[in-house]
Length: 132
Length: 259
Length: 146
Image (cartoon, each protein chain N blue to C red):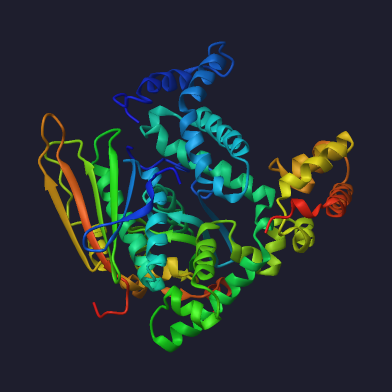
């Protein structure tokens, strides 16, 4: 198999190749953008994940949230995407907020220490809530 | 897939030709058929991966083949990517959608749902007491159930991926996912092979009712979309679906119940 | 599951149960292999974090190997299940004579973090075949200080 699929290279947050990995961006508040991701982030879907996260990081809102509640698997390719996003957030003088509820996501972030790069929250309301 | 691939290599030039043809070109139809035939083992393989969830394999292969056709239609070789890395997620997506639209989570036994909730509780408690993640045996001891049950519960919470058990268990989200109707019927139907039971009822329905039920449960359509398609109000669709489910419930034979 | 080679684990001399999974060396089949990994770890009573770690480590190893695998070759993944640990050998036939698994990547660092022990092995090919490239990893059931 060659490269990961160019899924959603045109519209990363849309249906593209079905719900193998789904990513949808919402703006629950004028100054907050939330990217909700569902599915498995692995070598097959990392490109799609990267595109969706890149779109979030380009958003003008001041509060940026990646909601990983629906993610059932997170490989190093997905961790790499998140690290990159953390650096982009830093350039904008912000911290990316992650919503993490499952072991499948929390464990990889914690064991690699990558959780330190983010504001971790256990639900979306909490994540878009408090000022930082 | 590369041209050197003994099984599928010969299809690569056909794919290229197919995607280069105008939509109304006479060669398109036969070429598409050949491609579908050629890649069918891929669809079959993916269908088999889902065959332990209680749906007939034939039906799954059919759904996977629809996904394969979509993949063939939408694939563009000039983007430089491998066909498989495009087709596999597309086909898998189609099969997953099929399960979601069926409201297949209804068939998760109540016992397993309850177990899922108890396991989550036990895991939190044990993690706190032990200062580390618990083992399946420890969870079993805490709950006073066999380890096999815990394994089954853990497996379930892993395997139900995107249309997850969690979604269904949190009441407000659950009904939104599976549909208000299915939400109501859930308690009744959760041990029933929905499709098996639905078949005889379907054959008794008037054509319009049958269309509505088919669109709702076997197509990709919401009540509003069905209303537009059939030319009646969404309320009417909702009523007809409710009636059909009622009928289904009263017809349920003990023999169609699976444990 | 059609990809499982032998459904009942066989016993090796040192008492380990062996499960071997063979798939096309394709990224699309790695989810199947990692499902086998979690299942084996759960049945071996690994703690939930260790199950998650093994699943991710196996995914990482397989993804790394699929990257260098020859077209239409096979990915072979053997699990040796012992009482307190699972040893995994994954290997493919590489597409290029000088193919190597590079160990200075982010993915490899993650793999080292997840597994208790991990190593690469390369064997030169013979008779026109590419070299065999493999990754061996070891994961303990948890509990023990790493």
